[in-house]
Image 1 (cartoon, protein in one colour):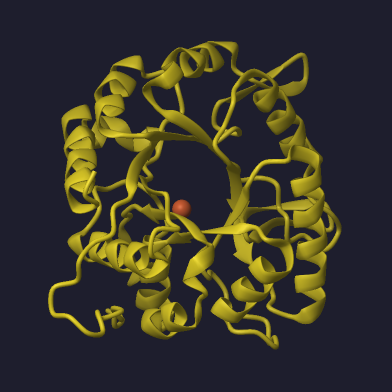
Image 2 (spheres, protein in one colour):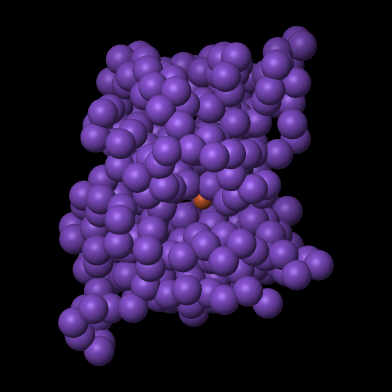
Length: 296
Ligand SMILES: [Fe+2]
């Protein structure tokens, strides 16, 4: 088992936690779950690909799920979190994702939208996995130009999230935090910091979380993710199937504190496939626990 490096509070034994809203993922088609979630959250995070279905040979948003989301009304703000844009592919992003986003935003107001800093296709071939960007000047130029196009197109805050490293890094000029700092400085985009992804990297590759957070400009962190998966063959997997561990919540608290009021929400992520195993009670309990931990 690899070392999990924790970012220790610097000048106090008991770190005061900054207040932060709580959110949860919800992918539709489970209204009983939504009823249990809503009393505990201020934000609902939706992944468009999960609520899409193929109709007339085209990928379209499910009318059924869209009407569920419209019914949320003022009970929570909606935020969109994409998985298939592939903003880091050298041969261009995936335009079908933007079609889904166009359609969604015509129907529902969102507080902001986000994607992952990575790529899921190479030379138009889908990899079936998301890989981290090479941290070179050329890659930075490319992704900054694309972020600018997204900001122009939607006129909404856009955030990018750190993803887990599945394969060793391509040699590049920037550290992980240095690349994110340069990206946010140049584009004004915000960041999602996924606390569980950092723990996976620490466990799997000895990634130094303290060093990463010490270098990261905390002003740009708008959203923090917590989740938990399973360990397989010694690897901690980026699947969202479990309740969060205390270590992940503590790391998220540290990130929120460091962001000093800039982090708006901590989102608990779980896959729809995990809901029967977790149960609605446990999910509601998890959200209540996060609300207590983040002071809302
Ligand atoms: Fe995440």
